[in-house]
Amino acid sequence: METVTTIAAVHARVRGWRREGRRVAFVPTMGNLHAGHVSLIDAARRHGERFVASIFVNPMQFGPNEDFAHYPRTPREDARMLAEAGCSLMFIPEVGEIYPHGSERVTRVEVPGLSRILEGEFRPGHLEGVSTVVAKLFHIVEPDVAIFGAKDFQQLAVIRRMVADLCMAVEIVAAPTVRDSDGLAMSSRNQYLTAAERALAPQIYAALQAAERRLKAGDADFAGIGRSGLTALEAAGFRPDYFSVRDAAELAAPRPETRELVVLAAARLGRARLIDNVQVTRP
Ligand code: PAF
Image (tube, rainbow, N blue to C red; front, side, top):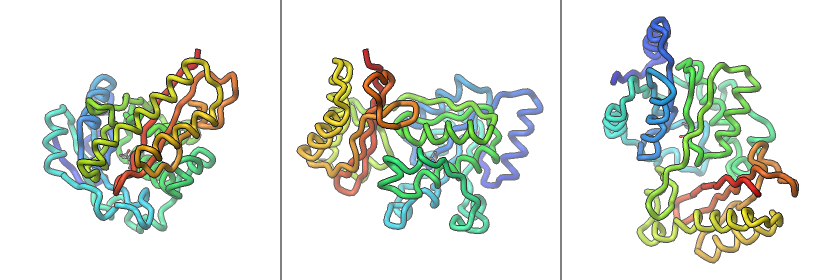
């Protein structure tokens, strides 16, 4: 695996592959890789012939009181894991390479509507930071296909919409959420949990599964299911931001006849903020 830090070096390598007719698959990450990220590289291997991963903790997607400064950075371990997973090129730029004029003054990409609900309400500007950096990374890497984890369901919806609206020639592939054996979705932020919080953390998935069971049994009281989820999380010791049943396509409030649903939850537990979701096809 080759490691590069500049946009020029990525262009040179990827354009060489393209001249050879190779299909390029891309996995954008913020590093501190775990088995969930390795599953994204595995998916990339099924969809491409050359694999690029980026490691960039994007300041633009962190709010002023969030964990940008403390976000875990483990570049050596990340490089080892990517090489073992069969990655061809690791792009690990400095902030100045991506935002030469600063992230405050950069041209922005925003998906209105989708970016302002759910995560957008509790983390204003977060999804705008994501769509902007992903648009930049797509221009830098020029991939044929890019892989994103389904755990960040709203992020995935925003990126799909951005790609469609801006006519970007990138296929977007969703990889299933990877969970620990007790059901907790893998996330770099799980390491903020104390041992006692870690034992409680799978309750977020348990609450989502309870909602899934009700929906599959034909319950269409979406608001009631949301309230029960919030109550269950509070009772377990979380400080929930939202627990909401949405239409899986638009993330809007579902109609009684909507069949493709997603239940999304975000909740704080100690220093960690956990997000998770389940997709449900109603009978
Ligand atoms: O999901 C992430 O790790 C980040 O939001 C992403 C897509 C790499 C953009 O910084």
